[in-house]
Length: 335
Image 1 (cartoon, helix red, strand yellow):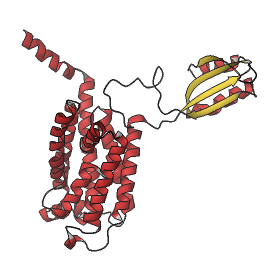
Image 2: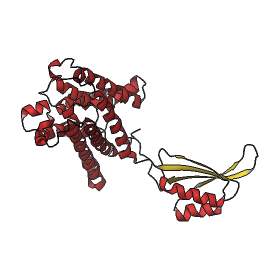
Image 3: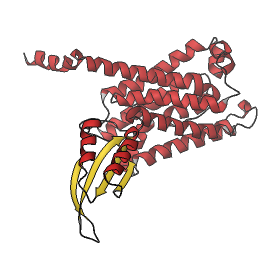
Image 4: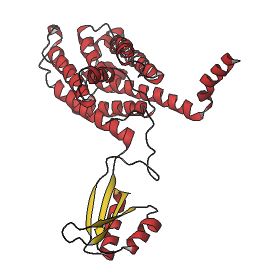
């Protein structure tokens, strides 16, 4: 009886539509992420940091081994290491995402290159018969590739998973070396880009493959890292265009109160305050609106009290009724 109940409780989440959508989102994100590398990053030796950036560098040294396979060589030991050093911080979703992405990358690579030789060389002139060769547009391919990777990674993170890799290294550095997570990610990416500069840029360890100076690829790598981070943040948090407004007035602005409640269908917090110099009691309103509503708010404030003191600033994130729900414990945040 107890065994049957435990099995039922284990399978219970699978009866919910959200559970299936979440797993679909993870696999869709991993597929988009892998496609970004296969079509726009790997063929041009752009090294966007992280595990797969290091895998691209190693593929230049050992072309018979696919980039995704090198991804496994990093991810599996890192997953084991995370269990030993971090405990059970990583959930099943992260494990599945970390192991699925290299597999999808390898499958896509075999599908889009016509021969084994083209696959080993990651020859862009043979990618899908040459119709996607962007060798003369490296800036464009680095931006497109980084955007696609960022979208895929963002979808994975929105569904409470990560693709492992450098995230695990950063968590270990954060715990044992007391380095901030964001700084640890930056450190890992910098080391990978430096590794790529030595191997791909200057041909150290692989001189016969260098047909000309390619150190400039490191600049495209830095662009790709920046674009990816911005796109991930956008996919997870949106555009962050909420505005925080403080309104301080000597008057009780009933017209503004009604406009906020009836026209904007929002609310605000009224705070009793006083001037530091004059000691005069004032009304202070605290409210959060979208950027599109700021102009109308300013207009109504001017109608009610042209001498009101108004501060408008960016709201980094907004949670609560009418906005996003507060994140659950353990929920992944991009920044």
